[in-house]
Image 1 (cartoon, rainbow, N blue to C red):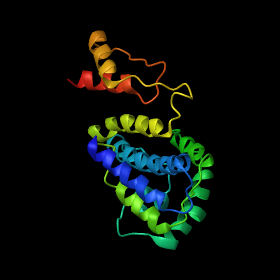
Image 2 (cartoon, helix red, strand yellow; image 1 turned 30 degrees about the horizontal axis):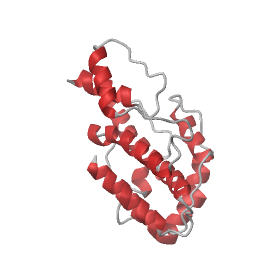
Image 3 (cartoon, rainbow, N blue to C red; image 1 turned 135 degrees about the vertical axis):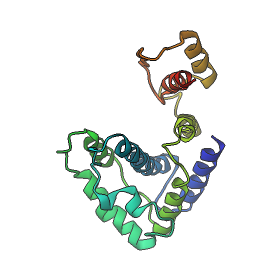
Image 4 (cartoon, rainbow, N blue to C red; image 1 turned 180 degrees about the vertical axis):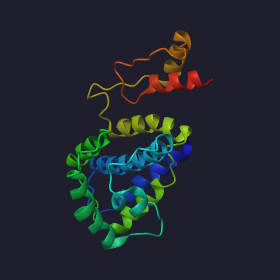
Length: 206
């Protein structure tokens, strides 16, 4: 948890130095699409291990490993040009013929987002920090809900937007009291960051 918190704090400090970003709202939107691609890439790796027939809807040259994974890779003006002129246009017009439905998710995310950063060097710094997180590790994946809530609280918009989050101690207690069993279904009808679902998963693991 503290590791991810430190990574995201460093990212926000880097973003504050970029002339293209104005305020926390733009910084969070910028971080959003970057995190999405990182998480999508980590999930792709898992799906490829579980299903030999799985193919990522993202073309190889646009996959995280191809342009973002190498800490010494693409940077500066070349990276900025790649993101603005190749990555975003291609993902906004992604081929939807893939049968797994993940292509539509990618396209919808990039149709509603923009790259605001003006410095390819700063983009590289952010990418390098994101590479410190592995969303196939349970501790990194589950801690992220808490981070998301922290970001919203920093914006001071959560309560004003009618969004309220159940403290982790309560989700864990209610899960213990419900005592879900393997084979039963768990439903969180007001799922925000998945606190109850995460608590159920951890309970079942034990």
